[in-house]
Image (cartoon, rainbow, N blue to C red; front, side, top):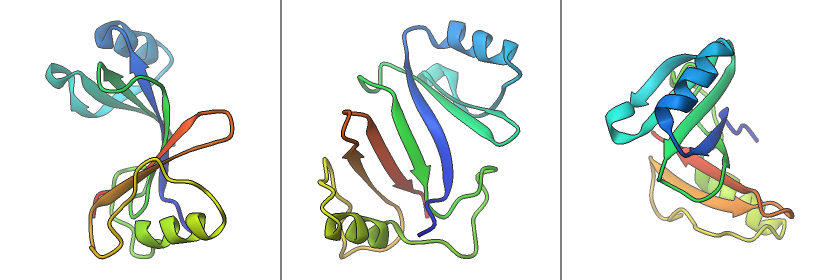
Length: 123
């Protein structure tokens, strides 16, 4: 099962202060829109999303179909197949992707400690 690019999505209080902090750690802005209060930062193959006021907790994120450079992958496991596999193995869904569709979709699960994991396919 190929999960795609991995990132940590952080719920931040002050996106400008967080941007400055992570830039001092060697990250650079890779995407996003600070006016909308979200940025994607990258340092080599490490990716961090900064999100102000969009969700309550930090989230682990997988992007099936994307590389760490946000480039489309030729071969990947479709999000609906990942969801079916997880459900067949007893993993409960907080939100679900519509398995009757194709293309972009997402779902959310939670690990045993309450950490949310977002699977977000953009293509």
